[in-house]
Length: 280
Image (spheres, rainbow, N blue to C red):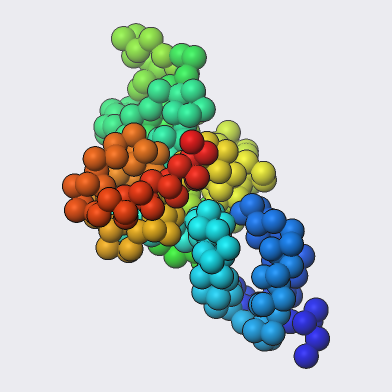
């Protein structure tokens, strides 16, 4: 069968032509060297078949990357690592808060604000240069979910309610400027068009183009602990239960790994991966 005419089945069930160039790019983005990319392609090509799922490709590539360099595997697994932060949305909210903090914002997670009509719980409240931003985070545990126009419609109505109250209160020395909507999946075209029209900022896995969550996580090394290949699923869940969401926290609080009764050798392995990802 001609490998150039294969189709790939996405998580949504839709099929699209398999692109070897896109496949190579996905490896290069993770830092895989060109000669290693070609070697991986040679290993994978005989295993490809028409209709292969994206999950199946991931299942075969991930252990292969671990053999080359755990750093490659961690980055390649980033999207799935964010899904693994669930089932609640709080770890994702904390990650978004950390991202904004690295962009110069003062942030708070889980803030109750009084609107003109009712009270609202705001996932992340961010302030910078006297302007305040109310940020709603929509975490989804499945990659095939897309936020349609109903979500920004709802979020914008909540924002307008608290904005009216906030900016009319003379006690507030800041200006509630804008609402944001952040998701770990994607937005539909209608959702994006509506948000542009009303001035609602959107942030998703790959939106805005070249400035989505994936790009920002890599830029600021804000990888979640679920991205670590040196930890088991149970160990990752233990850390999240201890409110440790980002790997940077492990580099700052190395005693946490000791609390989990890790051996000195295990701690050394984990911290080595942490330092590589954080570029320490």
